[in-house]
Length: 352
Ligand SMILES: Cc1cc2nc3c(=O)[nH]c(=O)nc-3n(C[C@H](O)[C@H](O)[C@H](O)COP(=O)(O)O)c2cc1C
Image (cartoon, rainbow, N blue to C red; front, side, top):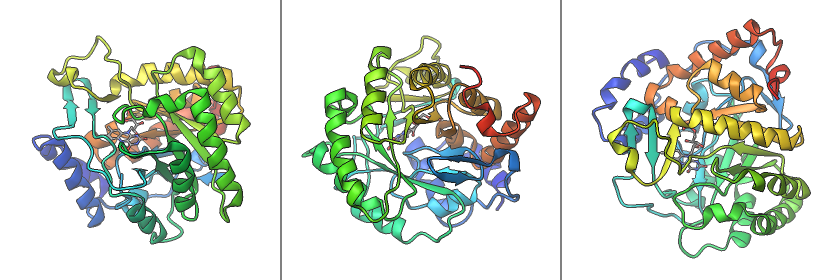
């Protein structure tokens, strides 16, 4: 099957319970049914960040492949990078179902999955078994269990376990569905986690760069301290952002009142505004990855002009399927040329 054919079948999935549809999509990917991108990437999309080379700046965000079961097939769809996880030290079942809701009229998703996953052991073993070269940069997104967590102990141990296999590691302190997790974005808690994680990193054989993924709901006055803390401990970048607990007044879907994190189209404007604020304070020091509501090449370029060196998406991919990857990449290449940019890097922060 080609990505286009796989996407053409997506409307069939709309009648299926969203979590079941997601699991079917992962199964199809594992079976190789989603196909492979037919062409190599347009050279204008090639970029370097985090000391890594990306054939294009479009990544798959965390949460789609929580257990790293479909990393190679996802890479074959043409993503420049893929970020499996969030993985936690021990397996956990997550919240009771239903916990994933389509807001179809709003092109949005609300989830309160609760970081359900098979745990670090299975995750790290799957990363270790991946074919190399993968054809895409590989991130690993790490988090803590709902019960019995000790963040200052757990994040370094998670880092140590995935570092041999990943090109970068993302510390998730921003999922809204694990009680207390977002408090770890606070200066003192973040400093304690980063200090120990970086101590572990310094002793590791492979030392992939560390990113921190933040919520779009952080108060603007928390940004300077957050960035300084990250710089103090040698963090390489920020992913801006995770889902939001806010509910824009524009939402129309019947599911808009569900508890959880909102992503997709209604997150685009607030997360891009937030990215721009972060980029202003950051002044080019940390690498920024823009995430939230991207569904087109124009959206991707807007994030890049607001300060992102790379971008990620989840919700629009879940709605539109594999063909969206090629559409966003060709749309981005066309938009870069139309606006007179010779590369992705040339457009980074152009709006600031
Ligand atoms: C069902 C679902 C599960 C998610 N799980 C995770 C997760 O485990 N870890 C994480 O860092 N982000 C997770 N996210 C957040 C996405 O990675 C992304 O930051 C967010 O959805 C915004 O991007 P989008 O608007 O393109 O979807 C999840 C999102 C969704 C919709």
